[in-house]
Image (tube, rainbow, N blue to C red; front, side, top):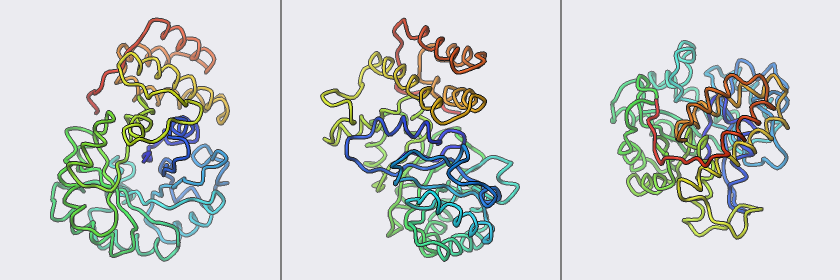
Length: 332
């Protein structure tokens, strides 16, 4: 699964990810988190956060909120894009979200969180998921009780990023907690956290027994991770890449990163206005450059580019000399 990521999981990046999915495969891709305070007043499908490409019938919007009335009006507006499901955000750890009692703050009050899920379940027949963290504190028993509550309240599956709120992305995600939740529930459990290279997907599954794996920030560096995993499972190459193998060596990944960046820029041009393009490219590189040797230089120089045309020229010049990707980096 391709994760909901603020400022990243928009239509341009989703199109890049789709270009690496195996031909004929189905997948679930998520929007960036959508505020239920804003959605009721928006033209869903026309805003930068809700634009869709033709054929995106596998798209799951992620809702940020806790008010039944706003959730109901948001769901009504989302009918315009015919979503494949609905996800409730109970994992965002940033302070501006917590002060509204959204995101992971909902995990601080199990009965209140239950009310939010039950209300949403009542309002939609679509598949309903919850993306959560370990919680506000490191309490595995509470985590399991909370996950069981989500199941009883009507969630069809849960995604767990096993870090507490205060850690944000620091330290290691405790995959053992994913296994505990998987053992406690009847509904599917998806694991998330510290997936940096293709082998991590299979390691997480082996360690936790989870029913699926969600890839987040690493997809900004190697969106072809989905192709690599599919190849490992014996699935076909992406459409248009028949007869090719997924990138494997650091040098192959360096060349593919150049290709992916160019595709991302083309999609930005297609979907976003000039004023909207560069902030999205800068954010994309702010994460993806961490895996690329000399990537900090690339990201810094792109931050100075005034427009997408100049950025594309610099990117092409940067990659005239071969570059490589490293398997892992420090995520903070």
